[in-house]
Amino acid sequence: MEPKSTTNIFNKETWANFGLLATLPLCAIGVYIWWVIYHYLPDLSAWATYSILPLEKGSHLGASVEFFLYDTPKVMMLLFLVVFGVGILRSFFTPEKTRAFLSGKSEFAGNVFAALLGIVTPFCSCSAVPLFIGFVTAGVPLGVTFSFLIAAPMVNEIALGLLYGLLGWKVAAIYMGTGLFIAIVAGWVIGRLKLENHIEDWVTQANISAVSIEEEKLTFNDRIIYGWDAVKEIIGRVWIYVILGIAVGAGIHGFVPQGVMASIMGKGSWWSVPLSVVIGVPMYSNAAGIIPVVEALLGKGAALGTVLAFMMSVIALSLPELVILRKVLKPRLIATFVGVVASGILLVGYLFNMII
Image 1 (spheres, one colour):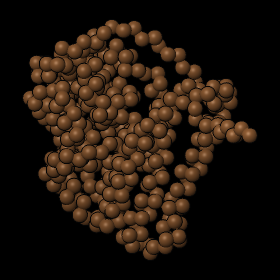
Image 2: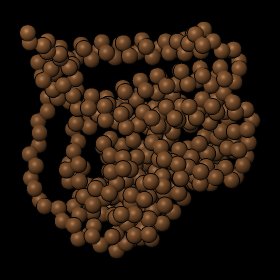
Image 3: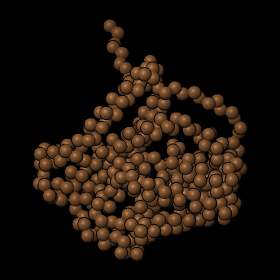
Image 4: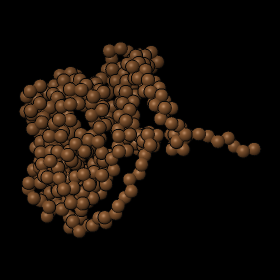
């Protein structure tokens, strides 16, 4: 007797049997189910906290547990939707297209285009070494390369999607605008300093063979598979940081008094912005993991500029990223990179603490 065959709905062979008219209704049904679950998350988290466990309403532990039970599925659902949608968008981009587009651009225009491309292309700080080599040997100017490498991890679609879902469009827009400003200006400054001789020699000696790669033609269903693969890859890589970040945020939400964060990270403390950068650099997290902490800090009275500076330093200037970059950059160029980006982050922090 032959065993029954099983069907995986998320493989290319299965989706190849569906036409566009069949795929779109399935996607619409999936989005509707997502919305219904998302809509009832506050009620479900409160019921689970105070009815199933049960914990006392108004207690520190109850507030922390409710925050954790609410934010964990909320962030994961937002992450799923954002990564899936942008995964489909990313199927139109390839590293080859990115390098070809940036090569030959004038300096400032190249910085702008590189920072914008950093938002939508599938690269993070862990991809810095191969990307840097590829960009430099392809003739992309050094400053343009840095604009891309600053924007890609810091102003990526996951950060913007989660900020919009958790904190609203104003905070997301502020973060995107200031992040792009830092990426563009920092890249332009580094380009003006003419530090190409501070790239490790083996990088400049590397050659890229001019191989013509035939563009793969993808159907809509292929792009659905591409989006699902992005979900498996990215969420599989970051989920532990998300859980840890939400746990830290839950602790802050439930146990840290309102006045404490306002006094440490408020507008009145001039040292709060540089201190947040100093604390953020040694930490290692990604946007998905640090945003729940940001949400909790803002809810406890921390100033927006200080929190933005903290978040940017964690994502854009993490110590592990600097260790990776040391493989291709000499110490003086790394120090310049850190100094220029940190100055931009400090400026953003102080500016928003003054005007908001």
